Image (tube, rainbow over all chains, first blue to last red; front, side, top):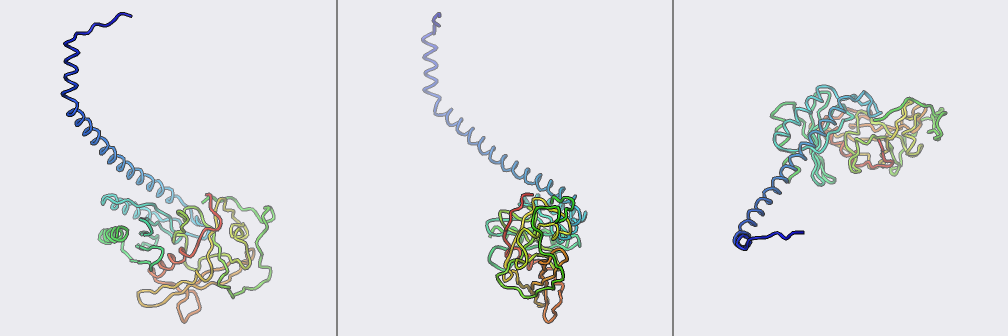
Length: 168
Length: 163
């Protein structure tokens, strides 16, 4: 295999660069990767929230197709108005931004939207009857119940109460 | 929420629940007696029972004095339907006696009642009493919700649902 001839001057120039540049380029590289990691983290959180809302939307669609007596004890299926109210509330929650943990069909007829943190649980239940209930409880204390109306003012009030409760 | 067409107890290998066959209701309940209720997986999260499992008025159960936990899943106790993959929750009668006050200071207390059915003698209900009446009363929405939460706290999984 033929040897590759190199110029002594060129080799020297490269070595000189290596001696002069490393500290500054390392700083640039570290900064670049730090920003990349930061961005990846924030993107990942964003993607997690998006996925959560997609899952909640899919669950709501499933519950919209329940039949009467879905719980085997005579529960009414969630009404179109309860489904619509739940979807509208989820949009308000999303704009906050805030993320519910799950939605559950209610044997009372309706849909409940859950928020949990540690032992604290809060839910808003939209009933087929048009009633709206906010409940906040843990495993020890008396539950706090608030009867709401289906309007923006009460729903934003519910969101404030839920946020204060689960984050206090 | 997987239901299959009915199968009579005669066509299943499972021992059937006790039928009423002329027996009358037994209104005495031992505080340690258990109440059973079937559930689908949607109402249990990390082993915790969600209040949305309870429906008023008079939520139904079966009682342990006259049944086994699995009887509540038997077609004879399910209006002839079979609930594949459903589970069973249980609660002590003493823990299922809960109370809540409405805004107008009326106090509602849950109380067990034995309400036998023809093919499900153990069928029982939780009535909501408001003194002095001994009949089931309709609680206010907030009292009802509190009762649902207290009842769900008193229940735990006995047979795990798979569906």
